[in-house]
Length: 290
Image (cartoon, rainbow, N blue to C red; front, side, top):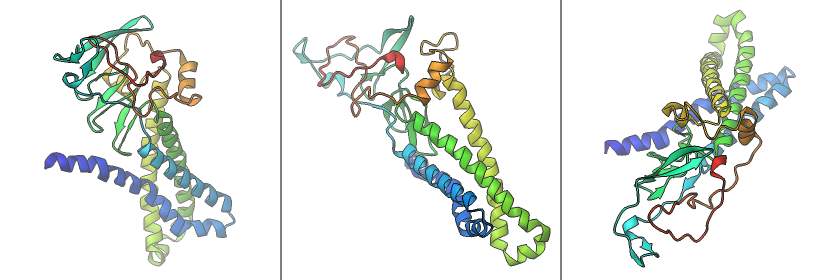
C-alpha cells in the first residue's frame, strides 16, 4: 500500500505540483497584469510574455509525453526457442559480455527484467520499469525519463523556462514599482493584486536560478558527451570513449536530430553471447554515436 502511494505521488502529484508552480504566476499575470501593460502601451511586453508562457507549456507537455528511447523487452530466456539447438533454452545468458568502443572495453549487462543485453549507456529505470537508451535521468517533475530521443526536448524546455521565468520576474518587478510609493493605500484597495505579485515575484526569482543552474550543468556535461547518470556515477573519469571533442559533442545535441536506432522499441544490441536470437528486424546504428 505504501509503495502504491509513493508511485502515485511520483507519477501524478509531483508533475502536477510542477505544473502549478510554473504556470500559476502566468495565470496571475493574465488576470491582473495583462490589461495594465496594454493600457500603458506596452503591448509588445504583454504579447512576448504570453508567447513565452504558451511555448513553455507546450514544451512541458512534450517533455512529459515524449518517448525517451525504450529498449524492447524480450521473452524470458527459458521460454525462447534456440534455433541452433532446435529446442527451448534451459540456461540463462551470461550476466555480462564485453564490447569494444573506441579502444575501450565496456561491459554490457544483461537485464534480468527486460531479458536483453543493455546497449552502451542504457540503464534500467526503476520508475518506468524499462531499459532506456542513453539514459540521462528520470525527471519526477515531468514524470518521464530523459534519454536519447527526448534529451534535446528537455534542454529546450529548461532553456525556455529560464527565459520565461526571467521575463516574468521583470514583468512583476516593473508592476510592483507602481505599488510601493503608496503601499498602505494600494494594499487596502488591491490586496489580491499586491500580495499575489509579491508572492509570485519571490517564487519566480527562486525558480529562475534553480532552472538556470540545471541548464548550465547540462551544458557542462554536453561538452564532455556525458549524461547526468554518467556524472553522478563517475563513469569515464579516466577516459570517455564517447567524447568526440567539444564542437562535435555540442553538434550532436543541438544541431542533430537523433536517428531512429530502434523502431518503436526494437532492441538496439543483442550479442550472440550464448544463443542466436531471431529478430524480425535488425536495426542499424553506430553505438559509438550514442
